[in-house]
Length: 293
Figure 1 (cartoon, rainbow, N blue to C red):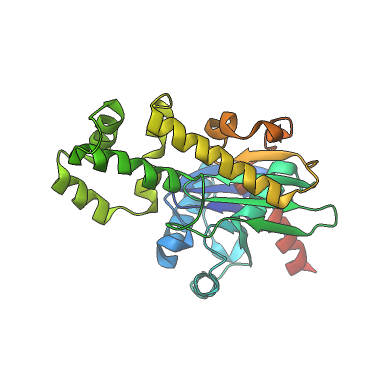
Figure 2: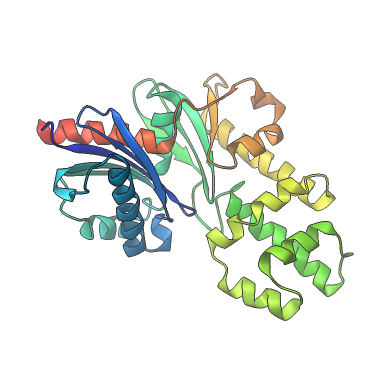
């Protein structure tokens, strides 16, 4: 691989994009972040966020972004939609190399350093995946907002806002949880909340999720967080029937949800070695070797 090339690891989700810039040998030079690049929010928007993040990473490294010298390893939410993936490739700039995988795969690479294991990625969306000793991998969940992505931020927020709706109707008493939810949405009455609901996307719902943890002792929030933990346990069991592989909870909600994961899984939980963006850097290294070969 030409020593003048750069390797870039990209982790793109519904809440934001993380970029790791490396030299041709994969040595890290800089990191940066930008807006969402999950494909469900639009392919053009995804590339804009990726370019913004890459530009910032190059700036921090004291260099200038030149796509023709870049090999990208992208772990993106939404690539399981083949139409979005095809459009993403079609809109790509003239890069030296481009490898695009499910963000679950790059999360796996980062979390266990390429070794066998299970990850449950819990962010705006959610997905779980396992890597076998032979290098084969599979994933569960990740069907996307609004019907899937159990235990994710969007899944939590979508269910959490129901409490505020019921309070506004007088179906349940007004309390601190409802007050926090309404304050976040800026709504003071039913009509105001309807305006917020009609504009809300997966990112907006995910931003409600921290309120569940802030009010974890509230019966509604406690029940919801318990359900999230059960869903995480079901993902782990589906991927590793042997119950022997290490399990890393990743993403922004990985640590907050850890205590809600079923006891039978607790002993196998471990900290991820690195994040999905660094997994993307490993993917970029492979792509660089492939291009050079």
